[in-house]
Image 1 (cartoon, rainbow, N blue to C red):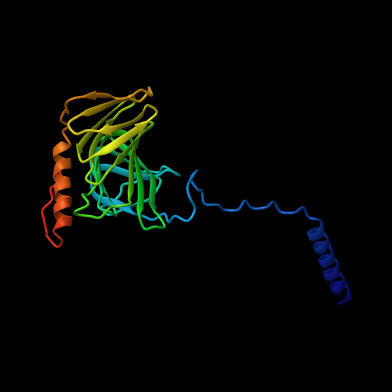
Image 2 (cartoon, rainbow, N blue to C red):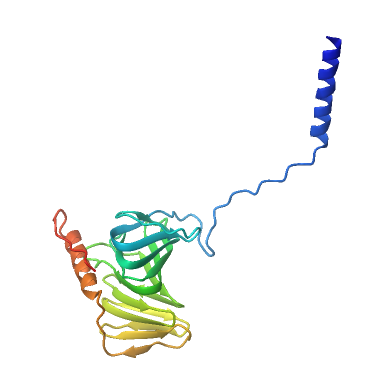
Length: 250
């Protein structure tokens, strides 16, 4: 018994000495939620956008891992998400009933989707490639006063007013912007310019010069799809409870 007791005491003493003299464990890096530069604290980032239609080849990813996956109708979209299409098209609806439509072979990102402490919404959509349509609800249908919406491409920012409706076509070197309805303004390194209907604004993405303006609008094969979607949404919101048929065939 004395031998066993002596052995246990010796082992305990050795373990104590080892713990006291062991090097300290490296400190674990604390987890921090990234805060975008210039982002005021106190705003609530919530899923204030979702897919209202998905057709064909459509994929969704976050800006963090960029693992693209097939979304479903009504899948939520949050700040930082990226949408890309192949032979397909998609429609995204914001909480204030504004809509973004993405044509085939297109890429868009959502650098900002916020609910501000005042209760208003701040949204920014960046067009990276392809054909993108944006339409904001008229105030006589939905009260969007105080909400802030920006369409970004290259170094340009487009600010739309309620009822604003634009088409953006963008590739590696050029962007073509058409205002289909309402009013808006585009800002860039060249300054600012009012957007006028029945004009096409051509932007050289490699330059910082003022866009050239063409006094006509060429048709895009997706225009009919876009016009039908706008009419459908406005009719559904203006007439609550009405069941209408929708044909999503871009």
